[in-house]
Structure formats: C-alpha cells, structure tokens
Figure 1 (cartoon, rainbow, N blue to C red):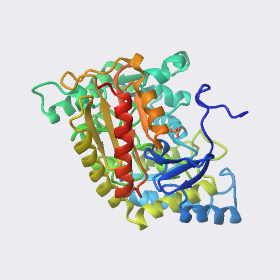
Figure 2: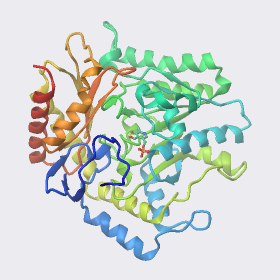
Figure 3: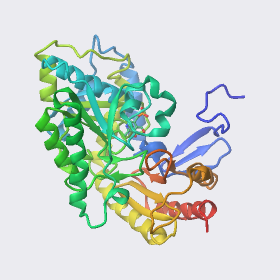
Figure 4: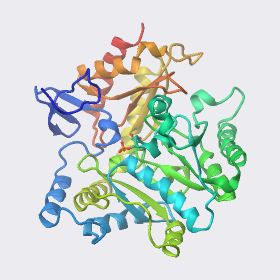
Length: 441
Ligand code: PLP
C-alpha cells in the first residue's frame, strides 16, 4: 500500500526504477518511450553521466549554503553562462526550484520595480487566456486555463486575460497572418487603456504556448508589436519560457526567434533536465538597477534559492546543450519529426493541425476538419489517449481544454534532444496505434 499522495487517486502509477536515454523502465521491467520528456523536462534523456557526475562532485564539495550568507561556485558560473547567451539587456539571474516559483518571483519583482520607481499605483497584471504559468496561487492567477483555475478562483489575485495568438483557431477568413498577429497584439493596448496605463505593471506570455494549446508559437511580428506596446506604456514584458526555453524550440531562448528581449524571463524544466529541481528568473539591468539604487533588497526568497547541487546540475545541462551542439540537433530532428507526423497523420480526418517549433510539437484533434470543431468534452479524449499510449509503452502529453473553457483536445510532444531516427519510427508507430484505438473511425 502506497502512502504517496498520487496525482489521481483512482490511477496509482507504476514505480519507475530505471532510465536509459529516451526510455523509462518500471518495476515490472516495462519500457516506456518518453516522448514528452515527462512534461518537457528531460531534454538530455535519462542517465546522462556528465550531469550525474557533476551532481556527485558538488555533493562532495558542499551540498547547501544559504544564500542569505553565501553564494556558490556553480550558481555564479551558471548565472554567467546564462547571461552570456540570454537576450540583452537581461543581466541578472535569480535561481529558484521550479517554474511556478520563477513566475511568482517575476510577478513580485515587477511590482517591486514599480514601487522602487515611485509608481505604487501599478498593480494590474495582464496575461492571456489559454496559458499556463504554474500552480501556486500567483502563477495560477496569471494562467488563463479555466479548468485548472476553476476551484481556486476565489483565492486568486485579479489578472486580466486577453486572447492568445492562436492562428489555427483565431485568424479570420481574408485576414493575413501578419494582420492577425497585429490584431491580437492590439488587444493588449486596448486592455492597458481600459485599465488605465498608469495602473498596469506587466504583461506575461509564453513565447510558444505549451500545456494549454500544444506547442503554439505566436505568428511573426506579434511579439515585436507587444514589445512596442509595453514600452509605450511603461509596462514590463515577462516571458515565461519554463516549457519552451532551454533549447526546446531550437534556440537556447525561445524569444530569440521572435527578436524581442523581455524585461523578465522565466525558465525551469529543461534547465535541470529532471536531474535536479531548478528554475530561474532573469531580469534586465534596468530592473536590477532600480532595486540596487533603491531599497537594495528584493522582498522575496525561498530557502532553496541558488541551491549548489541544483545549480551544478543546471550548469552541466547547459554545458551539455552547448558542447554537444544539441540545439542544432533539436532543429534537425524537430523538422524531421514534424515532417513524419505530417506525412503519417496530415490527412487524418480528426487531426486538424500539426504545429510547433523544434522538438516542441503539437497536434490538435477535431471532430470535423473543415469546421475545425472540437470533440465533445464528455468523451474525455485526452485522458483516453494518455492511458492508451501508456499501455502501448509511450509517454506523451495529451491535454483537453485547448480552446477557452473545456473544449478542444491536443497532444504535446517534447522528446529528449537525443531522439534518433529509430526512436522517431517507434514514436509515430505507437501514436498511430493510440489514435486508431481512441479516435472515432
Ligand atoms: N510556466 C509554464 C509555461 C509551464 O508550462 C509550467 C509547467 O508546466 C510552469 C510555468 C510551472 O512550472 P512548475 O510545474 O515547475 O512549477
């Protein structure tokens, strides 16, 4: 009898006892192809010796030093490495233990920045519907996923949500992709004006939306316009790359492709690659200077920020990404896998869209391709897909609620960057089996 509190009380998971490259192995010896890296975490696969050695070496030196007293070598080195490659003017790194903590820290830093600048009336956060920013109360309030928020709504801070940039569903007939992106960005300016520009502290968005839409990048030009609007009204731009960052979409930082630099950037997941729980918030020199020249103290903190072992793991992961040229591999293997998905499922009557960037790919399921109509939520398609795929030895990430409310189903694929052609064949074969079993004929 297990005493671990499971995610689903009616679905007690098997015990993982091993990990080898792209596979996880349970206590019965069953092997699972990890095609979602858990939830876009295991970018290096399982059992990476360089990372485990770095962790062991750090444990032998110093396991923990509280940042109220001491910093550590791996934290210093990892921060420098991230800043060397991050969009300018990001200049400082605040390490935390995961994605939600990074987002919470970002919201609080944005608020404190405006206070330090003598603008205490800035208190409104704007984010987007169909976004997920984490499960702690501040991050949950920022996210727009109706299903995740429903029970906790009375506890959440007030956040305005505008429409996501979701071309497959949102672009009107006769509208160009560019016009669509500009129209969606205009929603931000309209909302800032509605709230009163002097009251808005920040806008938060995922450059490539993950959990709530299945790998949906914004259209070209959208984030450039968003940046202009933020600058016009003194609103900070917070980009949440917890899922899509760290090489996942084919560049170390996803925002590189959009050609914008945020004021605050959140990363996690792939930063520790699952070897240690770690996340980070990167902020621009302007924000740091406001604190440095003001109170001198960011009113925040957790016991495990800048943890030496977690940052040693992060350092080994980022070095592996760079030294092994894994980001180029993401671009190549991602393009190949997307092509295979299109060749195999592109004409499937219930797959309306195959999308994504790098090894961050998604598929949207529809009852009717022409009408793009979603399936009835009572079919619980996502849950069935997850179960059937798992029985077939495939870990993937199906989700329901792709469209506002409960409608819409998609699947997210985020395999380890070491995925080879043989893994891809298995992946597509297992997906096909899953679709045959779950999607209507
Ligand atoms: N932000 C995004 C974009 C995410 O996808 C997630 C998790 O899926 C989070 C934040 C929260 O991260 P964590 O689960 O590590 O708290």
